[in-house]
Length: 77
Image (cartoon, rainbow, N blue to C red):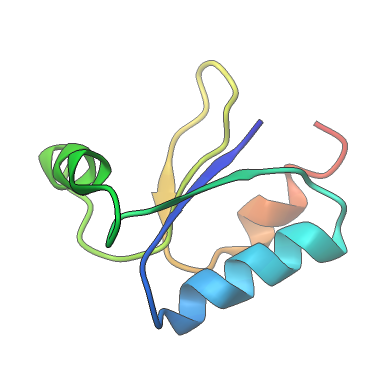
């Protein structure tokens, strides 16, 4: 199951969550404004933009930003 790392008042985060819901893709949301450990982990991985999506599949790369092309790849996965 994908994990979407978000922050408060993030337009791209809202678009990503909406696109996942519209396509029926279940996901877990982690708000980095409320989870300092998650924020530190993402910074350590080199991410600087929200949202960050962990597709939840072995061997799949994480991505940041609103990526409809990659979201479509999660449908039916």
